[in-house]
Image (cartoon, rainbow, N blue to C red; front, side, top):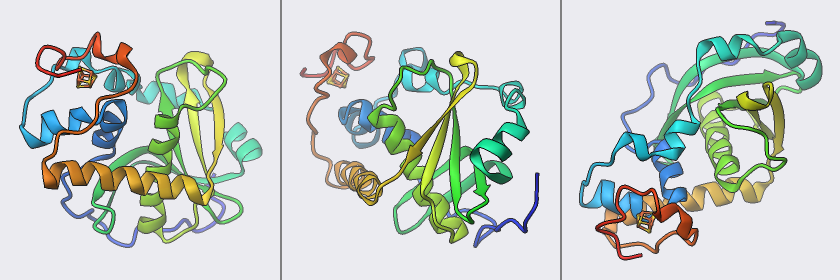
Length: 208
Ligand code: SF4
């Protein structure tokens, strides 16, 4: 599928930055996760983590994506897999499933979701994709206009997210909020979605 020289990252090894995109996702689930985990260092139990469970996918799943479809429908000219990226400016690092180079010269994150397509892209999914987009922009010095989600439980349906400038600003604001909780150490607001408290590993110690 390589038809043009693909851009290379500006540095080979990402700098050591502790905050990951997964941390930010957990903060979006409930800001208090940041406090419990990174301010007072309370561990959590893996089996409770819906976000992590949603992220399950295998290399076999990826092979089911038709390269011709990617090339013809999405204009993909190159794919890179599991690219580690980090930004000192943003204070976050992460590794997206695929970094795509598109025929218009832009790049895009491609993320597999162990989930069904529910007909809409949820806020946390959009913010995760926008964060990867920001990391791609900084790492490869290429524009990012869109991201892609592939829903494994909907026959690998691919959904396009068209990013606005506000989406990138929102993603940066969330990052700032996470870093502020960690650096200042304040107890943040609880999630408004109270149903999330039911299965939360912190429910016995959290004021809901
Ligand atoms: S119990 Fe509810 S408010 Fe507290 S950390 Fe868990 S999800 Fe957030």
